[in-house]
Length: 258
Image (cartoon, rainbow, N blue to C red; front, side):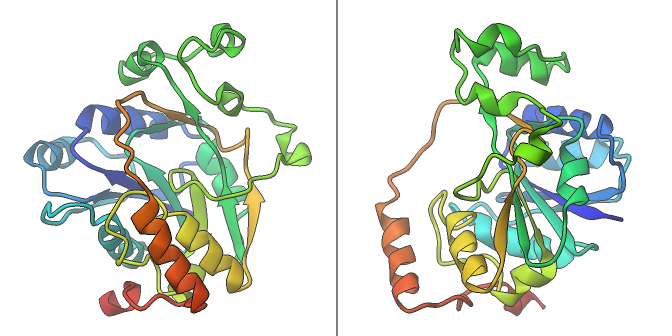
C-alpha cells in the first residue's frame, strides 16, 4: 500500500459516509483507511461495522472525555501499516485525485500541504447526498462559500505551486518516520486546533523538514456546519512555552504506544 488515510471523526456518520463515497472515486486506490474517533459513539460504531469497505481498514475509538484528538491520532499513527500518513477531518470530502497527489510527491523530510473550500449549506447537502458539485456559479458571487479558489482542481498547479504558509490539519500528509522522530502529536493540547497542525509544523521544520504545497491539486470540500471555534489563547500560550524551550521532541507524545 502507498499510504494510510487517517480520518478524524466525532459522531457525524452522514459526513463520513460522504467521505467514504469520495474514496471510491479516487484515481489512486492503493491505500488503507483508519477511522480515528475521539469518542465512542454507538451510531458511529454500527455504521463502520456495516459499511462495505473496499480497502483495508481499522476503527479506533476512545472514551469521550473532552478534546483528546491528539491522543487518538497518535494511536492511529502507530496502527498505520504504511510509512505515508494522510490526515483529513471527518467533515471534508475529497476530490477524486486527492490521494493521487498526496502519494505522488511523498518523500521523507517533506510535509505535503493542501487547503480546503468551505461550502455553503446547499452544496454541503448535495455532497452528503452523493451529488456532483458545480462550483463555477459560486465563484464570483461567493453565495455563502468561503475560499472558493481552493475548490478547483488545476493540473498546472503542479508547476505554479501556490505556496502554503502553514499546515492545515485536515489536508496534510507526512512520513510516519518523520512524525515519530518528534514524538508525534503533543497530547498536552486539550483544545481544538494548533496541536494537530501548527505545533506539528514548527517542530517538523525545526527537525529539518519542509512544506510542499498541494494547493489546487489535493482539493478538499469542507461541509458546512456551525462553527465550534474556541479561543486559542491557551493553546498558543502553551505553544510559545515549548517553542521558547525549543522542545522539538514533545514530552507527552507517541512513544508510550510503541
